Length: 533
Image (cartoon, rainbow, N blue to C red):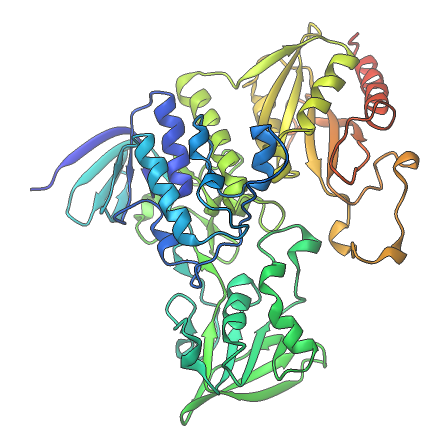
């Protein structure tokens, strides 16, 4: 017999984002339930990555005793008050085994007694009034708010004629012996493609990795979804002429021919010349996408970026379905290939910010903030203290900010970890109270940072003593002053001042002369401009 369950908030998916959201709701005493298709949390990580090694770093030995600082080099732990629930205690490996992470997620759920219903596959979501979610047994779950944390669960298949002949990264054999002596084409330019290529180097006769556009390296772009150095050994075999190659071009089609395949490739470097190349195997490793098929038309979220991700506003809410929120890797549509919302070390802070947004909207709970003495020196000290230890701003660079909120009476409050886009909108709505102006504090890379080769010493660098910070390319703090601008479109404050703290090799922005004094001078000017003393 089918059953109906009612809950205030329903989470679909018990991966890292779903667990983080459930933990925060549990801590706040909010009624909710988590539905998970797998028999344990983190089912995705029981299969992926296919070669069972994560590229999210794990560094137990930092030399620091500050737990907040340690999270800068711990990309796998979820946020909690329990120091035993840090992933760094599970393995010393810098690139840990995926199975260790699955074990960690199970412990996190168990120790926090999270309300998860395992073995529950959602088959439909409708919205006659509240959301009604139905599982494969016919049980229904009625909820006012829905948080989807299912990840990108389906392969992204590009529009290539004959693509059905390719083997998917999700299913292809990971036994190198199965490719002995074969010519292999891997379509894709990301880490899954190069992870696959590296696995076949010792057995395949020829490996080609193909895709349009220039290859982007994470160490240069600072987007960790671009090619990581741990996966780029294949490039040695290409540049040192060991039969393998990187094809900069577009695969036009895949045609079956006898026992193999013929693939025309349009090369970008030679005036779009098309060459037909024969292969024994073709593997498609072009990433994943969000699956919106469970949603009925009246509540199906609009998609974006080649229909790979749900389109979301600054509160991670569907742009076309109110009260439908998203958490985890599918939130990367907000900062696609710019910051780290697609990865655990980024979205754990995104989920915490989402929780605070929901707490304010539905329960009237104000965003946590502390009072500050209304002096430039006090603000400078607060800013410098935060940028020298925060992990959230470090991970979600240019996306997450601390805010100094100035009231009409000259009072100041310091609010931590507010998404920049949400902050602007929230101030204009009055969500933070009566605010005349506000500062944002972010960590950012400099303009055109991805165009700089950090290993080219001939490019030159400006000395720490002679720079205002504006020419810094590496990660550094940025303080911006906005005046509240009501009735503006888009809803964002008016930028009235900007200050960059000089970059530092060890990311220590605490020099009185280089960092604090220039910041105080900037703040004194800005305070005077708005009549604050």
